[in-house]
Structures are given as structure tokens and as C-alpha cells.
Length: 244
Image 1 (cartoon, one colour):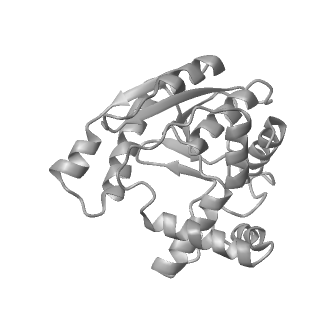
Image 2 (spheres, one colour):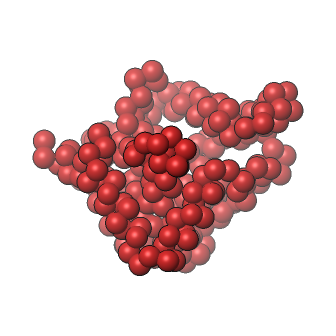
């Protein structure tokens, strides 16, 4: 996928769900993975010509694994002229050694988001951009259907009252395959996750299920995504923000 296509899809999502306002300071949580780096690239490029002025900040929560090398990501942020902050934590030690969690992902995510939110407030950011793409939207819906019996998924835009921050997801119209293609085409410095349970979660199960459905049913991904946008999930009504 070329940059122009990425920017077009990102802007479409931002405009459809009114994700960005004049003067926003937006933090992007950088895990080192393909999705967050693609989102950072897209938002910084978009900020150069988008009619509403906004600023982009990159933040990595270092969980404390010894084998995470962020050197190339630092250089990438410098090239993009994006301020980059690394938050040192002991989350890995707490989750895997002190608590010895049988389901570590939940606690890790909660602690990671807490550290990220604290840093965003310190930076003066009012929004955080998560790098969930179209496949993630559908995966979450499948997880909800299979394990909770509910037809729902996360929202394009959510205000968090407790921390007074707004979460936006500008990549919801971008396919995972296109993210992979973009990363390869523009040689983004992806850092492999050092987490010992990476790729062994229920989300990975849902992702593999979606891939199987796509292989066996032509056009099924677009139909599933359309069902979400047209399924009366509050906050997902397409164009509801544009009609204000």
C-alpha cells in the first residue's frame, strides 16, 4: 500500500467519526509493532496538511523486558520530527514474577495503559490514538460473540471520563494486509515483541478464525465490517458525527 492510500483511508476514518479537533495534542502508543508505527507515520504526515492543526507525540511504555531494542524507533521518530518518550517500568517483573499471572494480558494491559495515560497528561495531550485496524475491529466483534454472547466491538472514538482523555482509532478502515505491505514498502523499523505470551491469546484465535472465514468466503470481511457500522452499536453509526 502506498502512502497516499494510507492517508486517504486514515483521513476517511477521522472525518467520518470526528476524531480530530483544532489544537489537539495526540499521543501514539508505540509498541514497536507494525500497526503503531504505521499509525504514527500516517498521523504525522497527515498533520502537515490536515485543515485542523494538531500535534503528534510518540510514547513507548517499556515493560522491563531486557531484549527490547528501541534504537531504530528513536531514529524513526527523529526522522519524522515527532517527540518520543520512553517510560521505564517494571510491569514485566510484576506480572510474570511477582504476581505469576495465569492470564497475564489483562493485568499487563491495565498497567501499561495507566503508565501511558499518566505520561500523556504530563505531555499535555488530550487524545491517544490506538493502532487498531479493520481486522482488529472484526476480531473483537468475534471474541464478543463467541465468549460473551454480545454483538459489539470497541468504538472509533471514546471519551474516558476518569482520566479525561479521548481514545481515537484512525486505522479502522485499513486492512491488516495493507499495513504489512506498507511496512515492507517503506521499511519501517518494526521491533519484535519480547513478551513470552505474544501470539498465544484468545485474540490470536479470533484472528486465525477471521483468516479462515476470508479464505472460504469471498467478501466476508467487508460484510462483517458493514454489519458493525450498520448494526446499531452506539458510537458506530456511520456518519453520525458528520451530520452534526
